Image (cartoon, rainbow, N blue to C red; front, side, top):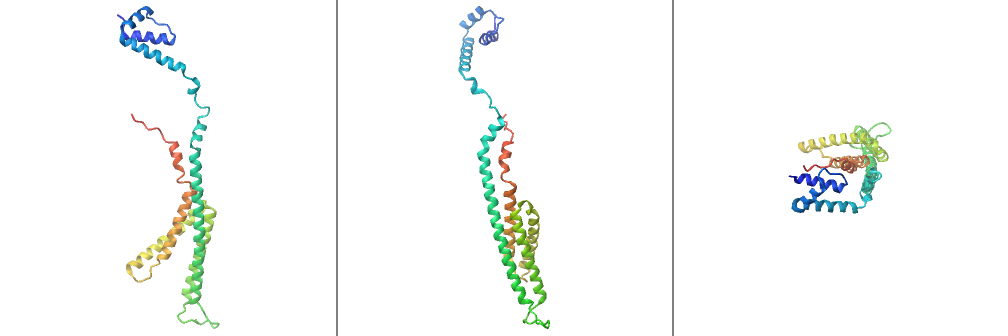
Length: 233
């Protein structure tokens, strides 16, 4: 007695143009009386016709797979690059404005220092309450502000070198914030919230320029391209 598997194997061989070990008459007789094998034969013939009618060129792989992938994501990378350039430009403008602010700040300190260090030709302090030591300290503070202004302009010009500027400004912010908290707790000194706010904004602008120039946010599309397919098994 011939089995269904042998008949179906013979039918598959017939479609593929191969020789079968089962006699063709036996196969025909079995198919004529077996609904299961007849249905298998009809499905196999239908599939063979569909594949034969399909255009073989539709299944040909692309000539260069890498070019096809890059072409598909080129638009996304152009948008990311455009956003990156806009971010760099905005951060540079902010740093330039902050640099001008530090210059104005230094000028005010110099004017304030002149009020504390006015002396007569004889070397005596002319103004009432003038203190040359305070004036010297204010001149030093003004020099620090001018240095920060120049450093910010340099960072805006060469963003690759701004890490050093960020470390210095961050250290100034940390020290000033600690002194401000101490003054707030003790209540013995005037709290320099304006100075803390200016330094905080400066650190934020430097961080924003570093992130935009180094492409921190632009790396996400590359991570997506390098991601492995998800297995649902």
